Amino acid sequence: MASLPIINMVKLDGEERQATMSKLHDACENWGFFELLNHGISIELLDKVEGMTKGHYKKCMEQKFKEFAKQALERGEELDTISNMDWESTFFLKHLPQSNITGIPDLEDEYREVMKEFALELEKLAERLLDLLCENLGLEQGYLKKAFGGSNGPTFGTKVSNYPPCPRPELFKGLRAHTDAGGLILLFQDDKVSGLQLLKDGEWVDVPPMRHSIVVNLGDQLEVITNGKYKSVMHRVVAQTDGNRMSIASFYNPGGDAVIYPAPALIKEEEEKENEVTTYPKFVFEDYMKLYVAQKFQAKEPRFETMKALESVGA
Image 1 (spheres, rainbow, N blue to C red):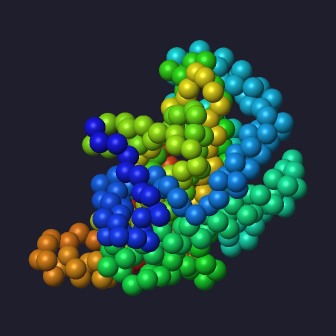
Image 2: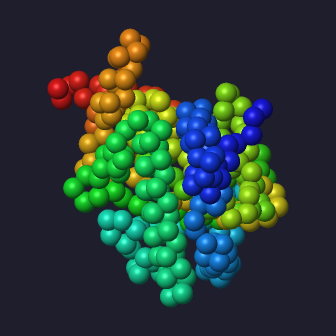
């Protein structure tokens, strides 16, 4: 089994640019996941984010999770398995179009400021990556960011998670298998405790913890815009018996009213090659999200089919 592609971004500025761009294109086409090194976010900032996130969990969330875990384990013992519950402790931050960070309870002021700074760095990285994807796809620079825009620009938010040790991992998933609904997901994960896996060629592959790296995966909207050239991929978190895994996943997504559809240039390119072209649906992102909320842990293909059916009804 091949290992997860690792993209060293410093090589984009030298003689190895073409080879690195080719590696990125292959990662998007064949994996839907890759790991970034030398991504431009300082090690000092990453260390601060990690330290404060772990400290916040210990101080404000650990006891609450222990109470949840006790009840969940009792219920799991009765049922022999829990299929609709995730072994995780989370909170959510919104950054764009408006931030909610001042309203999140229990966050220390220094932690708020550090997470604001981190979000700005991730936003810049996401936009740089989108333009690299445009280059590889033969789309004009800025096309993907504009496609995500809507009337108020993209939406951008962060899910801060801890996956504490689970004494009965056969009963629970840390997080059940799913594809991500949105656009581009940037993950800063624990470098010591593993658990994240992606589905490739019918097998679950570990996404290895690597210090100071950012893991990137593609969401359903990029699959639609690229008309399936790049695909979102099922992934999950496996509960571990030891260690508390930190996961900070930031979602650079379309605006709620953004109209998502395959890039005409990519359809034309396929037609010119005289390939048979099946196009993905056209829809408003918030309509897709309403469907996704109910079907997150199911296959994505029926969601695309539902949106296609709605498109033909509205035509």
